[in-house]
Each structure stands twice: as structure tokens, then as C-alpha cells.
Length: 638
Image (tube, rainbow, N blue to C red; front, side, top):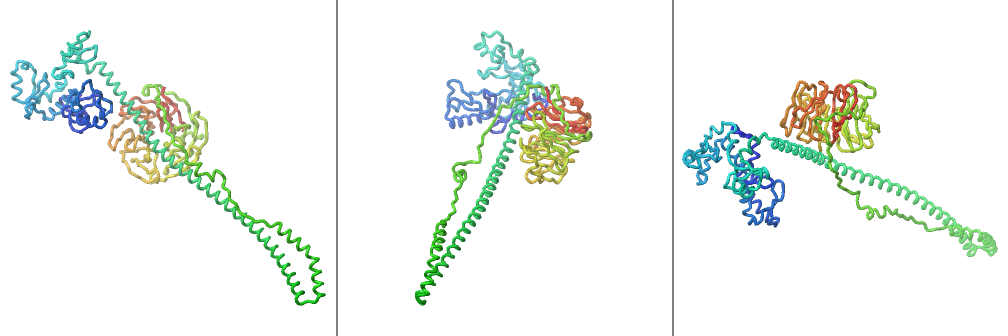
């Protein structure tokens, strides 16, 4: 709560109308407790009713809750007048004006005059100028009211908050004086007489308010509201992850469509080449057969033509004896030539080439109308029912991918939908296991991997300085390599860019080209980082300090001598932060605001020097790597 000593900056948002974005004028609140200037909400109501053509109510401009009016609400133009005044807001506005010495006399305001207030009545909760203060002290009804100067009010901590009256919503001219415990409702004496006369537990407002700020009811409500806020923040973070995943999935689908298109074109080109080759071969065979037939026919034609010339010569120029001799000779050969002609003619056929496409190709345009189908899948997000801050840590499985190397054999790990991927720097390997921890396959890299980040469930990116290597997880093969201008340790992917940690900088990298987009300077070595969005990240910046930045500004700084050489950083589903203390041999668990929850010794996990940590999304399970042994332990919080 703000005091009379100073008005907290946090009041600025509380005292700002969500519609006009200025300080409230005549603040009125809705049943959903959102407050607006009376004129602003009136204009909104009239516009909303006109647009929706609904005379029964309207939706809150902020939360969209339907506000239904009582019976006989009158015309929409009067609805705002019927809304209750937000006395808390009015009181806080008075406090703000008093602290700025801008408070004007409330009595003079009724006469449309404006005079600076010099005093404050703690009973009426109104400010008065010098003249009105004198009158206030002379009236019989107010002569015993306690009046203090504005300067005294400003310098007296708690006076403002302890004073004052609140007026009844049902009877605006009546002050709240009693509290009905049966209905949990403060009210005026008139309400108590009419509506609460049969109630068993009705007490004075002074008795009801005694100790209310520290009462169990108040603290439990505040804690519950904090819990609700954290749950919503967690859901918003899941939504942000989902948004990023959808963007990535969309890009992957487009890539898959392009790949399918390319494969179809390649396949069609191959079939086209094959049919063209077959056409050329068959065409050659036919033309050769036709040519052979032509040679045979030409030979027969030459023979016949020669015989005709002999007959013509004998008939025209030879003797009878010569004619007789040649005719008899040709007659004996006639049957032979005739048989040759008949045989040749019987073998002659008109040949043609016929192309008949197969049905799937012939009807492709009609039968295939799309590359595939798109569906939207969704499932409820079920959070583990464990106390993530106080739960017991259990080691579920130990992976040993160090290949026999016993020192400086560190790696990293990541959870995917159907598998777990682990890296080992000295052996230059990425190793895939299924969810039952059974070895599946592995991939050798050109450099030792220092970190791994998820692009989607089918692709990961591995930081292997000076390269970012994109890996197709299904086939365990390198899909793409980006060579950077810097060598780095930590790597994270936040659509549509990578962020790498190196030396005293974080660098944003274009995911397509590998070019530098921007740098963020830190005050010390930043080996690893965690980023939830492009403009929100956590990193170390010296030997024992970790800082969270939002939009380039430090939101919190955590530093302690019990954290030495911070390395891997991650966040669980509740927003708690985990930091691997490599040199201090422990894990530091912080709240989302950077407050220490606990320091967990590395021996709890069966390791000596924690290097990297990676939580499974929406889960109480995490992977933790050991710098010394290269072992990677899968743990869960029970």
C-alpha cells in the first residue's frame, strides 16, 4: 500500500483509465472490478449497445466479461451514472495530489472554484482551503473532526491510510459504518436496518477492519492471487513457446511442400527421359525395318525393270529366235520372282508409334488435387502435481556417452517428442536414444559440440564452434551448416534467430544466412544463456553473477560468493531458474524474480561439476551434464 511519505510508481498504472489512458475523472467500476472514467465508460456503453444492438448489457472493454444491468436499467446513456464510485481509486488520487501539493479544496470545487487545499479532515476524507477549514471547524456536526495540515499529512506515514470513510454503493450519501459477517458485506446503517436486520453477525466497521491488512483472510487471498498470476504467466509462456513452434512448423511444412514438389518434378523428369529414350529406340527399330523392306522392294523392282527391258529389246529389235530364247528363259524364272514378290509383300506392315499414359499420370490433375492435408492438433497441457521448489530430486537414468574418456568429457542434452539427444564434445558426437533410454544411432561432427538447442521435434541445432550445425534428427544427418564470425559456447534458438554466448557478448544470428544481426555486451564471460523470447534472456556476466534482461534492461541481478563460474541456465514450467555452478559444484534454484530458493549440491545428482541443465517442456524432468566424467543424468523432481 502507498503511504503518505511517497506515492509509489506502481500507482500510476492503477490510476490510469484503460480507455483514455489519462488519470481517472469520476472513477466508476464494473462488477468485474475494472475501473474507468465515468465519461469514458458511458461513451463506450452507448457505442457498444448501438453496435451490438443489445439493450440488456455490454462487455467490459478490458476482460470482455458480459455486464448485465439490473431490472429497469433505463436508457444506455444513464448506465454509467448508476455504476458505483471506486472509492479506493479516489482515495489514491487524493494521496497522489497531496504528495505533489496539487490537491484543491473539495468544498470550493462544488462552487466551480479552485483553491489549493491546506488541510485534511481525517473523518470526511476531504481537503479544504484556509477559509473552508475555518467553516468546517465551526459547524456543530464537524467541530470535533480531526483536521491536520496537508504538510503534516504528507510527512506522517500511515495517517492517510488509517483515516477516511467509504460510501455505500446502494446509498451513495451514506457512509459505510457496519459490516455483516453473514453476507461478508460492508454497508451503511440504512442497509443494515433494511437488508441485514435478521443477520446474526453484524458489527461495527471499526471492529471489522481491525487488523484486516495482516489477517489470514487477506494474506491467503494475496497469496492465492500470486499463485493465479504465476499459473497464468506459465500458460502465457507455454503459449509463447507454442507460437514459436507454430512458426517453425509452418516453415517446415513449406520446406516439405517444396521438397515434395522438387521430388515430383525430378521424378517426372526421370520418367520423361526414360520414355524419350525408349521412344528413340523404338523409332530406330521401326525405321530400320522400314528401310530393310524398302531395300528388298527396290531389289525386286530392279529385277522386274531389267526383265521388262529385255522383253522390250527382243520384241522391238531382236529376231524371233532371240525372242523365243529370252521368253523361255524368263518364263522359267517367273515363278521364282513371283514367289519372292508375294513373300515380300506378305511381310509388309504399316508400323506406327502409340503412346498410352498410365492412368495415374493421365488422370493426375483430376485425381491429385493437393499435396496433402493440414490439420490442427491440440491437447490439454497437464502440469506435474509436485512442489517444484521443495520436492525431492530422484535420478531416473544415467547416460554415459563419454566413450571411455574420464575427464573434461562434458556434453549437453535435449528432450524431443520421441527421443533424447545427447552430445559429447571430446568425441565430436551427437547420440540419439529413445524415451526408454535405448541407444538408437549417432552422428559424427566436424567439431566438438558445446551446446544443443531445439528447432522443432524433427530438427536440432548444435553449437560446434565456429559452426551452427542443423541436424535432421529422423535420419541423423547434417542438413545445413552455418559458419559464424565468432567462436562460442552457449547456443539457443528463438524463432527466427539463434543467440550465441561468447566472451563478453551475446550475438543474435540470422537463421538462414548465419550473419550477425546484433550484439549485447555483458560485463564478463557469458558462457551459456537461457532465452524465452528475442528480448528476454538470462545470462552470467562475471565469476559469480547472473542477470535477467528484458528489452535491454536488467530485471534482476543475482550474485553470491557461493556461486562460482556459472555455466548452464534453464527455467522450469513454473518459471523457477536453475544455474549450474561449475566452480562451486552446486545448482542454484531461483524464483522467477531472482530470489534464491535453494542451493543443491552436485553430489545430490551423483556428479561432481555441473555443466549444463535442460528441462523437458511442461515437465518436472531435466537433463544435467557433468564436466568431469561426461555423464549425463536424467532427473525428476518428486
